[in-house]
Image (cartoon, rainbow over all chains, first blue to last red; front, side, top):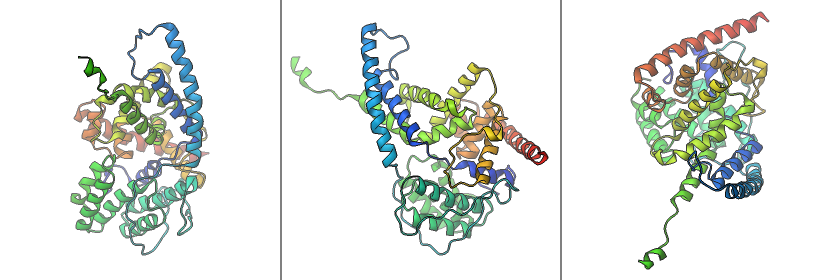
Length: 218
Length: 183
């Protein structure tokens, strides 16, 4: 049975697997979000009470400043978004034994059949190509876990760790690794991996689930 | 007493502003996707995300940084999406071709995009309160107890909604596949 949803059929679970990965918001939208949020802070909109007692003239002045801040911060954020992507905390790479492809949603009829995503071995991935490569690889690892092919999942996760050691999806990768280790019956290794996960990602939304994994059923 | 005025006071609001803005930016991908999962149209996601930031900042002092941030954010997203839906007073009915999502990236295959679209369309056929529980638990791996806490609903209600939403999701996917097969 699947640990996160034992009561959904496998074909539905495989579809959900494809939806679990979250794509990156485009740089322009990210810049807009940043500038709007920053402008609301500058204007005090986020912390002021609903009924403001600020004089009208002062409100116009603040609004003007907010507009200037929006343009300035938006430009800077766009540049940052275009040239720099945040990365997750570094996580130790795992040994690679083999690399095998599987297909996200192979059991879901004709709906899902993700092809292999290639990434240059040894290169330093960056930007959207790296994220796309990461996601493709991790999707196949997730599908392998969903099918309880844990040895294959471990190989895919090791490949991911080798190619995208400190990638954006390192958090999800390490959570999957704990699950795969449990599936293989390597509970001591799973406990160590869970402890490493907690140290590296103390605020992860997956943390509660990862903590429970080593003592859960395979 | 004048000397007391010389002691510089910390500016907690600035620190909180920075912390809140940083958290929002860090989880922006998640926030956008959560709104899509909750049925928000692509053209409206940015506005609702801004509403979420304002709400988040107003209650940032209540957030316990030792707890996971995403369930906290999702609870905001759910309430904002629900209010927006009531305001619009309509159900968002998406067809497979209407889903405009960047997805993981251009290298995602057509089949992968179809799968994600299918899930979104199926989710949109589940009433929002049950959909929120399903998304939190099945897609975000949030334990049901945490779901009930974040959404301020009794634990039994959370389990009940989850059970029903699972059935509805299966039925919706079956129907969608049947409709696709007939075309």
